Image 1 (cartoon, rainbow, N blue to C red):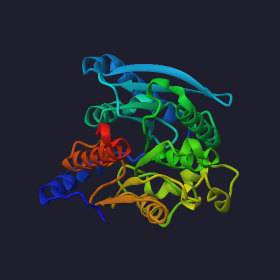
Image 2 (image 1 turned 135 degrees about the vertical axis):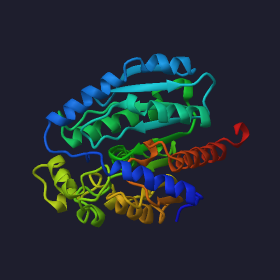
Image 3 (image 1 turned 180 degrees about the vertical axis):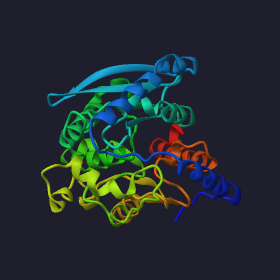
Image 4 (image 1 turned 120 degrees about the vertical axis):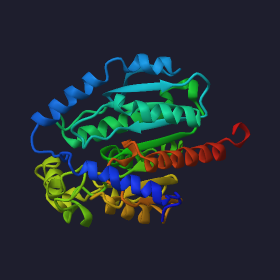
Length: 324
């Protein structure tokens, strides 16, 4: 299923890193206090981040953009040259932690490798807002960008990127954009890392055990219920809340990644199977990979990100062959 050539050394390295992860606490959603604490620590760790990007030749701009009365903060990253495309990025964090700045390293690497600009969305979090408002934030940011919010980049192809909870929000945003076909047509591809596409829980989520790495396996289904209070499983599976069950017709080509040791594995594999019926999909299921693996200091992570960049460069070249 995966085109990434992982040799024995890369797999051995991944297993060694997993043994370290086995000692680490698992991410849980139980109350509001712990996410608020983690969020505070995250913001402290990000002090000076803009200056570091500037030294690397990347300019940062913060804006609050508005679409249909919904105001959303975005973080715009630009390299030194003119971009060939624009990325619309949705960060992860289980809907309860994270911000646009947490993706700076990943986005800077994409800028350098692919000559793109990045718009990363600071959507509201579940500690203060229901998931419907988070989805509205993401849709508003997408409509702003696709309707000419950055006129200097008019005509450039747009690509949507989402990781984990951000993968869910990216897929949900694409489904909602079907109401504006002329805007959806501007999106030339999607890059989705180990997203959540069934908020009632796919089989791999419901069967996750205590040996799960990174995520709290036994508590995952309950966490999804906490995220969607007042709904039953049938309601949780309604699209776009659960993108897995949406009408995917008209969506762009996509590249998707998931790990064999991720309890969210089935979300990606099942979405890829359905998506491939309407558009081109490149699916990678990585052996020994738990949730969040693109952020780990392993050769596997480097190879996955390199494959993402190669796929994106090929899409940009196809969109504008004269400028490739």
